[in-house]
Length: 131
Image (tube, rainbow, N blue to C red; front, side):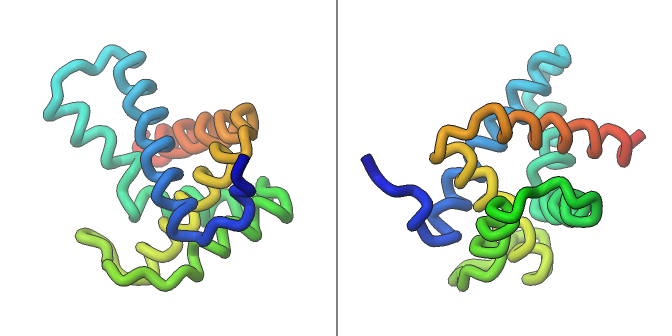
């Protein structure tokens, strides 16, 4: 059994990106959306670097992360990536990487209930933001 708490921020983000996207895709399908083009377009409201950066900044403003969760967010945010975002500036991209690292940490350490709680919170926030 691997100690996932020792993984670097980018490895955590790699997993977090995938797991978060699966939850969002499940949510959109549950909402009755079935057209691939519309699904992809709608998903970007939740999974783009801009959306993820917005969400993690709201989490920090509302102080809903534990101290440990904040550490993993910062580990991802501060990780030195050799690739840039396709549609975001470097600051937004780094903050979004922190969001993904947090999701990866929660997933890999089997904190599924907490991860799902945060994802539901994210879905609600995006819903409020997009009216």
